[in-house]
Length: 292
Image (cartoon, rainbow, N blue to C red; front, top):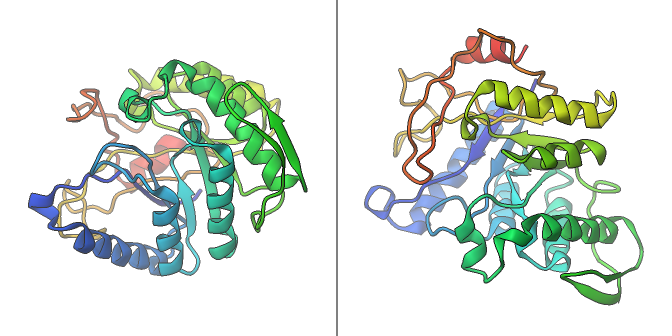
């Protein structure tokens, strides 16, 4: 089991001040997380101003440059919304410059705004996602690539540099409410990032993970990264969570089985942006009980 932090950050100028100070505080947090021995720091990509991060490869490189050992993860990179050559270039460079610490989480995207602002139909998200990843994967592992697809086409192209980790960095597929995503990730032998707090029940998450494991066909080397929802008060960094000052348990949690019935304890609350229920309020001990 591994522990880390996933940053789906809200920025509010009336609370956090200007962006320069906010980013400086994030860098100090990341350095402390690295020094404390946590395993990974993950960052989320969205187009909303002040929600998650937009220039994720730039932020990821800042994270990598400020730390020395912690893994640098994306949860997730929205590869369906960008030309795959550009994505392959940016994240290969991050893996090289971080010394091979990239964990590449990829996803289709779940918010319609992320697509609308770019003029991309959200109905095309799956086909764009699968085509983009095929191009990225080949550019990272083949000497020369030519591609003629539905959404992108180019003549012979070579990428340099390629990722330090061969043939690719560890790949995590963001899977939320689409069973097809779990099956696709399993069939291709990738890890998954799940978000139980965005589903209507723990049973639903168990059902989807069962489909993933079935598609894996017995492969026990894959990991399940599980974020849990916990807000931190402004100005206190990573030291204390809002509920009783206990340290938050976040992601990733490799090798997590389906949660056993009757253990863990999920509570429901409404998040302002999604209007959907969220969050596991388990302590360290109960979180460990839940995933055993």
